[in-house]
Each structure stands twice: as structure tokens, then as C-alpha cells.
Amino acid sequence: MLLHSNIIGEGQPFVILHGFLGMGDNWKTLAKQFSGLGFELHLVDQRNHGRSFHDSEFNYEALASDLLYYFEYYGLKNCILLGHSMGGKTAMLFASLYPELVSKLIIADIAPRFYPVHHDAILDGLASLDFQVITTRKEADLQLSRYVHEVGTRQFLLKNIYWVSPGVLGLRINLPVLTVHVSEVGEALHSSLNYSKESLFLRGDKSEYISPQDEALISIQFPNSSVQTITNAGHWLHAENPFEFYESVRSFIA
Image (cartoon, rainbow, N blue to C red; front, side, top):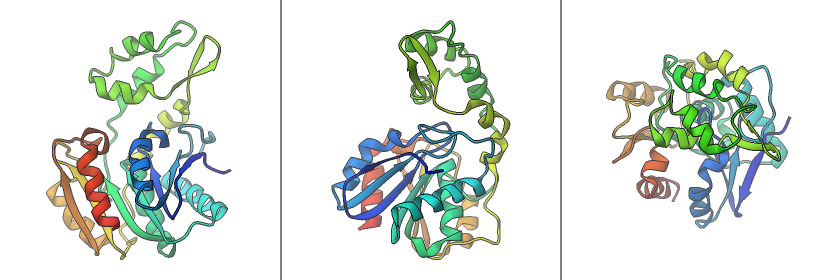
């Protein structure tokens, strides 16, 4: 099945993959800026996220297969590929398997290593949202605050809420499947895989997702890569410091 996307601008294709529990629309503001540089932005919703299809299978092999079908459907080639967090892992695997389709790779705050599960409180909070009782976003925020204390994280998660019908809210994400398969999100890129074209890894200076030790692994599997730090930013570096993030990407793709 074809992944849902929002396509902005014209020119060389530039595909952006969101992180776990996100959606393509999270990137709309930056995408409009990138399109002004002469690119056709594809803001893709990965399976079980956003407006894309729901499926019981969820792992990086399936996500990469979805993306290959998307590339074939739209005839994409010579593409810039950017992925954040989970989307970064999908992008790493896709670029390693199909390097002829990707001209440059940009990875936001994730390394190719294994990460332990750390989304338990968030998933529990989302599961606690009873939309037979909750009828407003404010009520949903209040309930979620019992599990997720950080306001910015809650605002990010609440973007998954939509009106199923007048007066009835629901979640776009396939929460049951994502909860069952959450361990897949942290899986490492297989050590035999690599991508030799130009790559840029961006990390937030307040994030621990890319450590100094990870740089050695990155240099092995992505030998033509550089690692840059975005200041005053954590894991959601593109949202916390969008100006510096934009400038780093703009310089790289230019």
C-alpha cells in the first residue's frame, strides 16, 4: 500500500521521514523553507503513523519496503533523504540497501546502534486516553500530563489526536501495534550494511542519542559522513532550534 504524504514545491526530490509517534506534518514549516531552495519535499507518514495505512507488521525492513514502493510509485531518484530518530533508522537502512536512489543522506539525532526501550510512560499515557469520556484536547492533555510531564512532548503527542466524527476524538497512530512492537524501534542497523555517499549526522547538544563513542560506529558504516551539533537543542532538534538546523542542512545540500 502507498504511504500517505504531503508534497511541497518542485525540483530535486527531498524525502523527510518523521520519528516514532510523529507524522510528516511535523516538518511542514522546514519543508516550505527547503522547497524555496528548489526542492520537491515529500513529507511521508510511515506505516501505523499519521494518515498512512495500519498494519500488524512493524519493523525496519517493512518500513524500508514501504519507502521503496513509494519511490517507485513517484519515480523518485537522485533523492535527498532525511530521517529523524526512528525515521533516521529507516533512512539509514533504505540508503544502505538502495544507494542508487539516494544522492545525500541526513540523519537527525540517531546512531546506527541498538537503543533500549524507553517509551513506556508515553505509551501508557496514550493508552489511558478514553475517548468515550474525553471530548476535548484540553481534557486529553490533562490526562496525558499524569504520565508525561514535559509540556513540549505532550504537545507533540497530542498532534496525533483528530476528530473521528463530530464530537468524537481518536488517535491516528496504530497504538496497539506500536506498543506490541516498540522494541523494534531501537534495533540496530546490521553491521554489514553501509552507505558510502555523503552523509550528515546532526545531534542536539542536550541529547544523548549520539554519543562521542557512536561517532566511531558512524564513521565505519557511513565512511563519507560528518557529525555536527545543533546548539540549545535536545532530541527534537529540528523543532527546538529550527534556524540552526535549517542552516546546517542548507549548507550540506548546497
